[in-house]
Length: 274
Image (cartoon, rainbow, N blue to C red; front, side, top):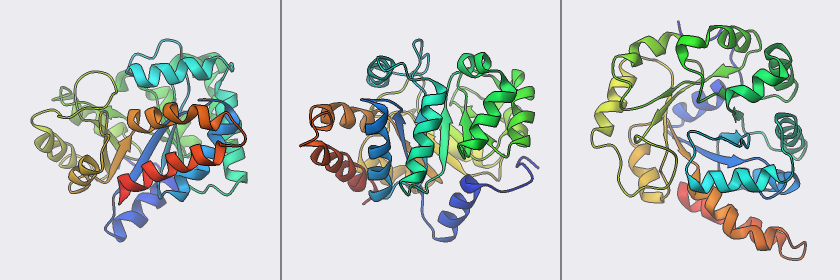
């Protein structure tokens, strides 16, 4: 059995959507872009737009998996000295504002290691984080993190790429929450085309797990969301939403136009789901 013993908000959301015959819309945003207070407002707007689960990206100075749009967002956030603690505080403030969507923290391994893994998971629990993605932690070296995540009832979500091949079967037993399938080889960023055998790749993953299967990297339009919703349980939208936030920064930074900027982001995400 690949799932941890108890259910959490992430499990319950996928179960509810499956019963309703729906696919999870899963935005990724970089916390602190353009500033932590705006991130809280953006999370409220994402929920109003119909998002189901949100990935909270921890800005990092050496983001190996991120394309230029998310790298720029990290640079803007790091001006404000955003740390994992800042990200968790932002999550708490969003919950206080009525956000009920499960949060999946997306962070590289070193920031977690610097905190100390025991303290790191204690902090995640306190902030009601439901899932965790560490893109630079291979499953072969994830045993300690997985054990701590299971103990904290937090899902350690694996990334699986079209090039994973026979590693897919080895990754599945340690997978939790959902399987994050990468649509294309390379870093994040909007794309007009995807890995040629993407449907076969998703089918191969589905044959080896009972967990929900989500797809991300490069998905940016309503048409692409519709296409992948036909055979995936979740669709992650990253760079397209981060770019929309980037375009809205002049509005977000002016108190008199902030609501207009938030409306632009909300409308963009709502049309992805329509």
